[in-house]
Length: 251
Image (cartoon, rainbow, N blue to C red; front, side):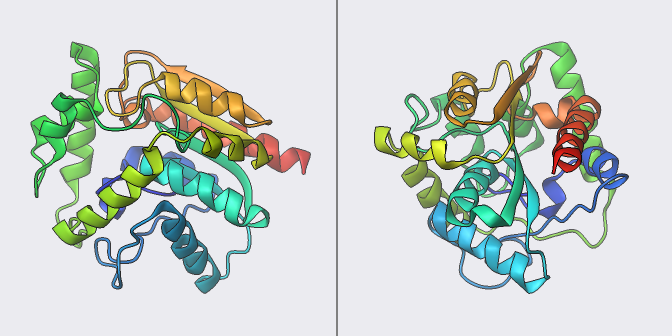
């Protein structure tokens, strides 16, 4: 599982991870320089992919199914291109293709909510959940699960790591029509998923991403924003397990 911009081990929804872990081995980690991981934070998505491959090698994982969320989805795509044999299947959640049109730069309202050394809960609700009563209620429920464990928590992303990740994301989302052609080389089965009202990554990017990979399927979750996988954690987990189960049964 590959995490979003400024995300750490503790930013995964335990309700989602628990359902996945009931049937699959789940591995979460921080890239170098993030959270409790030492080292220099990668400054490009390609470096994040290489760092992920080094981590996989260090724990003896030769091939994995990847679940990449937002920036983690960028890393998952790059890893599949860099080392195809290391990836069996891909779940790309609330993420976009490299160089896709209309994804360069966040809307001002989002940028003003996330460009702080420490995010406030109301900013997280604004950026990650739809602005409806049902979605905001789901966001509050997620934050309750997020805050439930008080001890042995991961460290938040430091400002230096945040700057490195900003560079990596900016380079990835810069308009680049040639970069889009690379996606045709990702021939592994892929499940692209997102919310119908994502304010961080426009939902049209999900359609473009799924359309450029030969074996991709797409699902859009209703009344949901960037954090759709936390709002719809039960359904999303079942969809992921079904998808990876189908890959296993056909291989």
